[in-house]
Image (cartoon, helix red, strand yellow):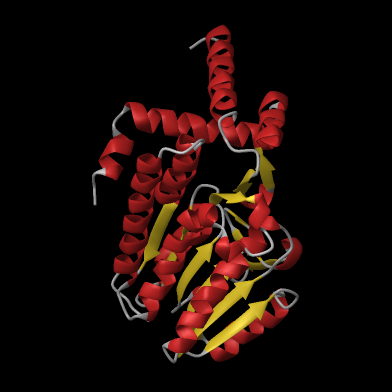
Amino acid sequence: MNEEQKKKQLERLKQIVLMKIATMPKNYKLSIGGEGSFNKVQIAERVNKMDDVGRKILDMELKFIKALSCGEVTKTLTSV
Amino acid sequence: MSQRLLVTRPEHDDTTTYLSYYAKLVIKYAEEKGVPVTDFKAGTVKKETINKFMEKQKPRLVFFNGHGSEDCIEGEKGEIIIKENENDELLKGKITYARSCFVAVSLGKKCSAFGKGSCFIGYEFPFQFWFDETRTANPVKDKIAAIYLEPSNELVKYLIKGNLTKAAFDKSKELMIKNMNKILKENEPGALERFKALWINCEGQKIYGDKETSF
């Protein structure tokens, strides 16, 4: 994947995160260990800024999307 | 080794406050079962005190709550209480469960070398949970957070009951998966995000060392 493709993929990933996070109730916050806790507005800010927290959120999203697409999530869900 | 449960419960932000409240439920359970507990609560989670206690009293089961990183477990406000290659030998011969981010990446793996009777359970991704901001005054009433924190509490309760470390590890994973299915069935706003956080905890929970040992 060249730099241009990477940039596009990152942009798409950001859009996915922002769209999903917008569905969260406003009184919900996500605790991410030592990074702190963030409501949906703060998460969107961090993702747009692409700081450490924003990058961690994108990493987790990517991990999750990959697991969804390769059937790993379904496998986990049906394992009990 | 003494048949004692050591719990650390710093409280200096939302995350540690929630972990502390939930850890208190485990303490209550242990006491009901007649298990002696040493509770290092907010204000007392200091490296020197805890290290001395672990050296002298040798509690068999250690339940850390708080922040962490790949090579350390923190106590009060960033104070490192266990650090790889510095004082990790304190975990030798003990069953350790660290409800902390990333600790399984390196520190946890190191415990594999500690031999029979030593086991480490922790997370290789950030331990994360959604919570309801309107419930922070009483976290145990927060049903959103309970979805994440109850399965991890059950891990320690299962150990207290005398189950093998691997069985306790599997039990908490099973409960996480049940809760994932519950989130999907309820299909409330933000369900997929809530699901994702729990899936990451489930995938990131790792066990190293003696999987056939018990409390």
